Image: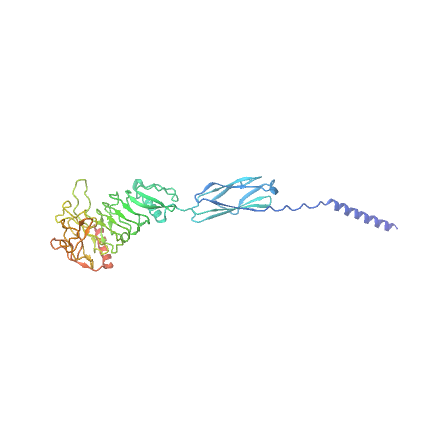
Length: 421
């Protein structure tokens, strides 16, 4: 009986103990519901900015939580403030200029408690130059070589070039890019190695200081070039083939220089009216007579594609008494004041006469001339394969076949002679 009593007491005590333990254990707190992650995208300008902002809106379920913002990886071009806080806030992203030549991306996450609440993606396009690529290359060469002398500008930001920063180099805005349109009075002391200027129409740089002994760029591409005047610059070397390939060229004045070598064979322009390459120099002082020495090394052959007219001085070498010079607007003058330095004409030039100028000629009067041209109301002299027998040293009778190897050899010969001098 006693054993049974003790058994009942033990069971009761154990039951009470279990009941007491059950009542002391609290019910677990429900897990908080993760907030919906907001996604935001921002775009930064390539030049950089310090006011790229985003309004951070705190949701009700994490109002009392401290939030933090951190980048997904280390970036050296973007930062954000503030980096932590409570409640609504405005995030400010500080972005530097993008000179990496590619788009940049940055990702930031905002965390409240242990939950991510915002994903922020920021993109920044690469920096674009405001000058066309080949024009920019030209301008950089001008600055690096100080080719405008004391007027050469200091450029701190090549991405945003001021169109008026370069004296005598006029630029136009085309479709958001700057292009060089004219070299008009630029005080050049040298020339870049490349002349790739797609919108260039005019070059007017005469009597430039420092161009003596310099050369025209051999790498030449000016599809819209109409007018070029480089008179009295003492430029030397061959005429670049690319200049002859300019299809819109109308007038070319390059006298007073010291060019040599074979002329380009293929001249693309069908509107060419003036080609003056006389190398007779200029007077040393105002009032002095013109120099009478010539550079005999320019020519080789007169290409048939240069369908222009030879104008020269009269038989006495006197400019003032020359009735045809400067009156006819279609001119081809190369070489001497007093002498012709031609090696020959290209065979098949197409003209059969070398007519003497006749001031009494009347347009359309075939009895005066057996073959004629009337250009701008003035009769002109022109090439032929006959020559002009009444004048010693007149147009040569020699006609030759064009040969590029011979032309290159002739230019090399002129190069050697120039170095020897």
